[in-house]
Length: 112
Image (cartoon, rainbow, N blue to C red; front, side):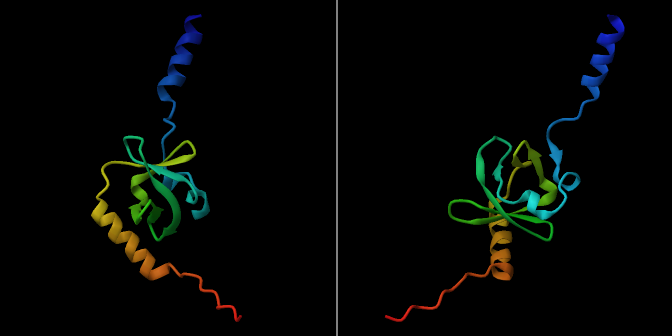
């Protein structure tokens, strides 16, 4: 029984956390999209809508936020933004993405 319990202890001791660094776990950008993003307190920030270079674009109620991928990890099916988020800088990164890449769809007006 001593050998089994020591082996079990070793497995538990060296088992990796469920929080994985994004840079090592996703195969392409689509793995990061349409996921809720939470902060370190577990509060929902918004939903991931795009990846632009090394920035995750998150849509919250009123803004687009840009969060560097190095500060993002998987937390189950959600994405965790690690550390404190500088909302001013995040909004600026989100606005820059919108100016560079975001294209609104316009529909021709119907004739009556």
